Amino acid sequence: MINCVIIDDEPLAREGLADYVKEVDFLKLTGVCENPVELMSLMDREPVDLIFLDIQMPKMSGIDFLKIVQNPPMAIITTAYPSYALEGFQLNVMDYLLKPITFERFFKSAGKARDYHKLLTKSAVSKADEDYFFIKCGSKYEKIFFDDILYIEGLQNYVTIYTGKGKYITLLNLKHLEQNLDSRHFIRIHKSYIVSIGKIEGIDGNEIFIQTHRIPISRNYREQVIEQVVNRRLMDKNRQVI
Image (tube, rainbow, N blue to C red):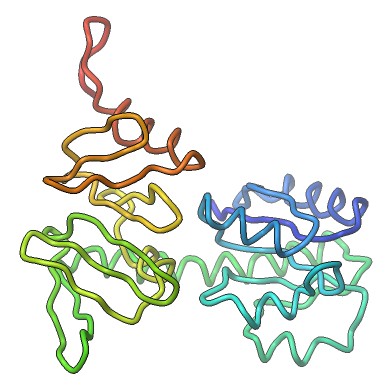
């Protein structure tokens, strides 16, 4: 399934696209936003694979969003203005749909996104089979084994990777790094933190314990963390460990 979000300031346009999404079995609508500012908040809370993005909106245009956001999701432009087509494709959008949008045209565009998503997924699986990667720390390249990672902290365009051997700081976006981690073994618990699920030793309130480290869980991620980390492996008198 492809997790998609509709961004448009016009209610009727949002409703029409949502109806189209419901008719496509490989699309899952995970959010509807009135502007890109709402979208950025949503992207901090959950994964977004594809966005159907209007151009002329209050607060921020769709084009401006694509220009300023690092590693944006796949994007399909939906607009009444053909004059932005060239600029849109220069920003690597998947397709450019002119309103009013027919279902046939919508489905064809969604198919392009599906084919590209398959390529990305195949690449991610290949990366998951590898057990290490390299990062640049100053003038030195450091080899990081996935199994050694305790947790990762992001600060603007830098990340600090904490391992059993020490910590490594590199110029890298946390969102980009997250896309290259196996979601079976790593989980986002905060807009600034990703942790190794296997290294978690306990959870108390809004904190995760890994060795001597106490890492905060944000309110937006707590339910997902409890479900994925605790409930799936919880043993009590009424149930067995799954």
